[in-house]
Image 1 (cartoon, rainbow, N blue to C red):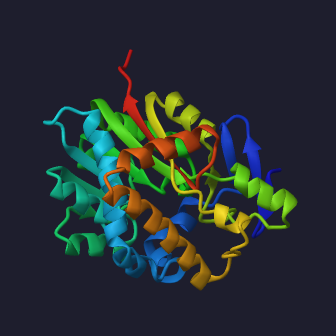
Image 2 (cartoon, rainbow, N blue to C red):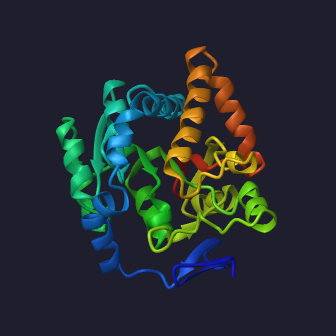
Length: 294
């Protein structure tokens, strides 16, 4: 057993190839959690904070679109965002000339995206909704796979909805990473990153890469995001302290703004790519191509 929290065990599941909780919540429990409760009870300030940080988010999203655009011809700009949240990733793409569509289970978030003038369907991505949505040159999944009972099934469906040689961008938390393990095993921290029932699955760079490859993708590029856990190692105990956590996040944003605004965005990407090789960083950002079907 890798961890225990809120009545759930986290197991390192060899058949799945990644860690996940047991028992896994039912479809009915998840539908209630994400359609009704997520942005009202679990993340009431999420959209407000998103707006406050929008210049930084646009910088983050621009870097991700740049990577996608490097690997696709200019005429292929059809994007689906699975779990599109309040819609700002889609809006960034639309301003770059992409044809964008979102699908989002939370009514509050979907309506926010529609309020931005975006095409957003309020539902879960499934066999049924995929047939309506059609095919895409790129599909984005930001902070989705950790919430899904069957990540392999979702990735396989994503594969089928991509046009030939299409791209997927996946972002998930990088959990049980080296910094977190030092904090847990040597500095007395509880495994705060274990957050059932909302976070079902727990990935690292290797397990996410293996899952993508098993579902037919060829991994093109991997990056970390800023290793925010580093602040804990330096004595800033922000867990459960929203004010201090916000301060640490602002320092992270300032660091990235300084590099990007100085024209050193590629340096930032190279740095985060190097961190990924050591398993360090708070999130995993993985780009992969739909391999040719045999």
